[in-house]
Image 1: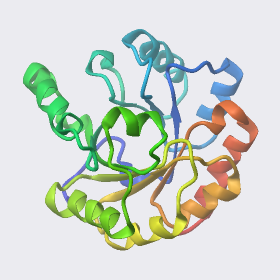
Image 2: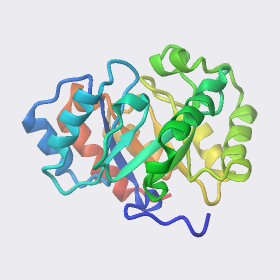
Image 3: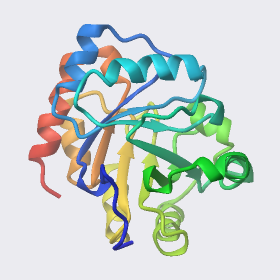
Length: 237
């Protein structure tokens, strides 16, 4: 873990925006996102993700100085020129495809061309049973706190993942659980994402998580979305 070094190091992040290539965003709103002071723009989604729409969104983000990352959900949508490639492994999936299966297939096909210094593995734990990501990944979401803490410990100590991602996708999670998860992680970076629609919610999660990922509110209330950057960066762990 100590030797994990990247041009853009996720350990230095506090805030990231996640943009869905299957959703429309105006040039004006995209400028506000990219010039907000966020640490990164992550491009990723669950459905409707194609090579064309990810490339189109990436080319628009690339006009700004903010790091641009691809969170891979479909290997067919991978293209060069991103700063980082975030690879989820859904630890609480009941289908091994989403833990190692798709990953093995991709490495078998493209491993010789991969730059491993640009790849960041994310140990995902999806907790909203109603979200598309949970349904696609067949995630076992009926977990108690000890289950989640065990997955976090596995991410750090068994798999040595640089990121553990607590994902509520569309609904606001439990800040107390996020705090508990943080206590079992030392080197692995804790990402929180899901349901953040106000700056106050972003600040609350920033007191527990290393990195707060803000998504849907970008499309619902761009002014509130931009406010989350300042409050997260002002909130200490």
